[in-house]
Length: 243
Image (cartoon, rainbow, N blue to C red):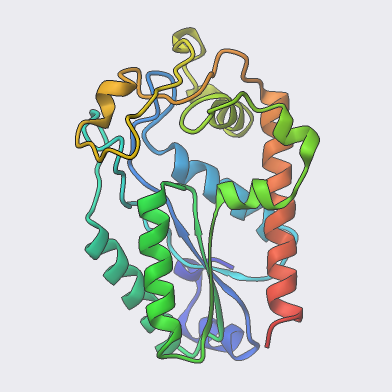
């Protein structure tokens, strides 16, 4: 069930049954010369759609903007501040609570550290004030938590952004919008940690961190199915084990 396609009566009835609400987050962010700006949004919505075909929960409208720190200076990236993201998330949780939702899962297609911190800070602030239960997770968490060593070992080292994993996923999910004739070469930037820098793009001018050259639809299918399976397990655990 998608919240924006439900009537108010239908929504109230389903919430009274204790249905979990998923609150998806995507971003408008560069993903190299070969992937669309909405890559993170497309991926998480497709994963949720697949899980939704197997489990009964409510999907809230996607938040299409987030915090993009290292990619903010690339064309097409539209980022919002930490405070705005935190406060927006906090207020959305408050609104779900006001509508008598008992359990909610914040789930992000974008797994940037600052972005996820803002979501988790908001969720923690909210949890101190409400009895509504909240999970905050990302697509990366869903793949890693599955602990499929064979799958994880197939990922090239340092593959963090618009590389093998995301390119493979997009080849499987929406192959027609991947510019396969424009795949950039591998890029493994060495940031001067722990120095804080304002111009991260100078360390990866292609807009990628990883290696998309050997990406494949078949590998994307494996990654996608792993994420969907993990999301279903998370929903089942939240629904049946947590009260």
